[in-house]
Each structure stands twice: as structure tokens, then as C-alpha cells.
Length: 490
Ligand SMILES: Nc1ncnc2c1ncn2[C@@H]1O[C@H](COP(=O)(O)OP(=O)(O)OP(=O)(O)O)[C@@H](O)[C@H]1O
Ligand SMILES: [Mg+2]
Image (cartoon, rainbow, N blue to C red):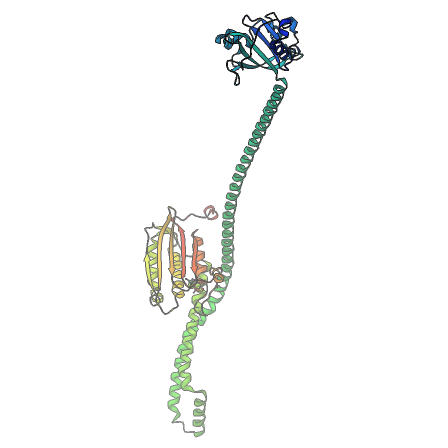
């Protein structure tokens, strides 16, 4: 928009009649504060809104170049002055970063700034300066409008402050949240650690518990063995004597009986020559009554059966004695375990060979310090038990293995593919006199004996069994015999 402009004093009478007067009225009454200067920077117009906004009267301003006074404490060009001078350097110097080309009017500029000197507490003004040109397009002055944008700026500032404040609050909250989150994460980590620690402790405790209950079982077992041992020693001693003389008397009795039968034979032969018919009849009747022929056959059978029984009782007594004094007449010695096993297998060969094939799987093991005969006894009991466990018509298999557990321990295993052991029986197999075998077939001492011997060696026996599949006994023995403390001290 290019305004037609004639610089002239505002109350020039001749011009009040023309269109320019109307323009002057229009200018004065325009609600936007506006002033105009000519090319010499002299104020030509200063409207009422301008007076009101800036507090400087038209009379004081028009005709002077003091328009800066309304804005600044020191003289300097305004945007309108720069539109006239057109000096780019000046624009940059006085309005750097604050001015812009007007989006509506070509060649016009606008800027916004705060003026602390205006009014009581200063004002924000948005001002636009545009060149004024005559018909020929010549520059004749400049016009500048001033929009009071204080309210908007104040609101904007308040908004910005509120926004900043909000951002600050959000930032603070976010930081707090992050902190809480971090604490939570720390908490979780600590909890996880504690949890893992708890679980580890639990495992340790469970292991300890297992060890304890195993130790307890062993204690109970050795306690049982000790008291049974004492009992057995007493019983064995008591039975041993009578069995001794019953056994020797039996031999004599057998001889006497044989003699009596010989004697009876002679009497029987003499029967025919007995003269007294009554006596002969009585003799015959008695012979038939007692069925002498049967007695002659049955008595020796009864005798040998009884003798077998006595032999077995003697055997049991011997076992009992062995059991109660497992270390009697024995010396600790370094021995080849394989040699012992071989000789034991030879001894039990008769008992085993019809029932099972024996497979030896020997490892490379060192000699061990042990009571060799007693270890043989252990092997024998295990192998005989294994053979007994194989009951079916098919030939079974017994594996005898050895191996090294570590630098200080070796093991030997006897495994069968026999009946296996029922869980109820498994708890008691090491108990003295526990047997599942028919009367006369087992005394139930084999394993308790083996247990006592292995314990004496500071070793252990482990059982792995499954009904119908078979059983594996593993004996772990220390390579070197360590003298128990109480014995070492004695
Ligand atoms: N290899 C095995 N397979 C199945 N059961 C077994 C085996 N070894 C032992 N047992 C069971 O353990 C019980 C106890 O065995 P232990 O050797 O102590 O006595 P026994 O063999 O019955 O009699 P003894 O050995 O005194 O002649 C046996 O009666 C049997 O029930
Ligand atoms: Mg046995």
C-alpha cells in the first residue's frame, strides 16, 4: 500500500477543504498510533493514538526530529529513519535480529521490542515502518505504526514461564521417577541376589541334611552291629560248647547204633533157632510191631540229617563269632584285591557256576592296605547273594568289577541281573539276621558281616537295585589304612 503524502503543517487552512484534509483527519483519528517523517527526518504527523500511547503531544513533536525521545533515553534512529536512509549497516546495528521485511507491504519493515521508558512500567511495541512515495515514485518520507502488544507479550511470557515451569516439573518428576526406578531396579537386583543366596543356602542345607541322615543311619547301623555283636559273642560262646559235645557224641552215637544194628542182625539170625515157641513168637511179633526193616533204613537217615543240622548250627556259630570279632587274628597288610577276588570266586565256584556266568572287569588299581581275609569274606557274601538272587530258569550274569575312585580310594562292584530288592527289604538288608531266604538257606548275617568289615576299613557300601532288573553292590575302600584316633593313642 502506497499512501499519497504531502508534508504540510496539520492545521493549514487551505488544505482542510481538500481531500488531504480528510486524510489528515483520518490520520489523526486512526486508532493505531502512527507518526510520519519526511526525508529530512522531521516529524510531519503524530496522531492522537500516538500521543496517548507515548505520552508526547503532537505539538511538542511535529516539526522536530525528536521522535527518538518518545522511545529511548538517548538520540538514535527509529525504524522509519532507517527506511529513509536505507542503510543496511544501520539496520543491522540498531535492530539486529529484531527486524524483518513486512509480509504485507513491500519495502516496509517490522520489528518488536520492549520500551522500558514508555508508560509506568514499559510497553511491548510491534512497529511497522513503510516508505512514503509521491506519484513519480520518489521517496518523500516514511510512516511508522505502533501496536501495543504488551498484553500479548505478557501473556506469552506467562505462558512461556508456565511452560518452562511445567517442563521443569516434568523434568523433575522424570528425574524422580528415574531415581525411583533405579532404586527399584537396585532393589530387584538385591532381591535376586538374596534369592540366589537363599537357594544356594537351601541346597547346602539339603546336602548337609542328607549327609546328616546318612551319618545317622550309619550310626544306627553300627550301634545295632555293636549290640548285636555283644549278644552274638555271648550266644556263640554259650552254644559253642553244647554243640561241640553234641557233635562229638553224635559220632559216638552213630558208631554205637551201627554196633546195635549188627547185634540185632545176629539176634534176627538166631530167631529161627530159638527153641521156646512162645519166645520165638514174641520176638517175631515185636520185630513186626516196631518195623525193624524201616527203622534200619530210617535211623541212619535221621542221624545224618541231624548231623547236617548240627553242622549248620556250628557254621552259624562260627559266623556269629566272626561277626562279633571281625578283626580277630588278622593283620593289616598290603594286598592285591584282584588276587583275593579270584581266590574267593574259586571257593564259591560250585555255588555259582550252575546259576550264573561270572564276568570279571578289573580296573587298574593299586594294592590296598586291608585285612585281606575279611575283604575276601565280603566278596564271598556279595557273590553268593548275587547267585541266590538269580532264581529263574535262565542262567544269569554276575559282573565283578574294580576301579579307582580317586587317589585315595578304590572300589569293587558285584552286580547281578537277578530279582532285585524290594524297597521295604532294602532298608533292612544290613540288619543282622534279616533274610528273605527260606529257613536253612540263609541266616541273614552275610551283609551285616560285610558291613562291619567295610566299616572297620573306613569304607562304605552302596546299593543300587531295581526289582526285576538286578542289584549292584559297590564297596568303596581307602587305599591306605588310617589308624582310628582312639586306637592310635592307645
Ligand atoms: N544281590 C541280591 N539280590 C537280591 N536280594 C539280595 C541280594 N543281596 C542280599 N539280598 C537280600 O538281603 C538279605 C540279607 O542278605 P544277607 O547276605 O545279609 O543274608 P542272607 O543272604 O539272607 O543270609 P546269609 O548271607 O547269612 O546266608 C537277603 O536275604 C536278600 O533278601
Ligand atoms: Mg548272604
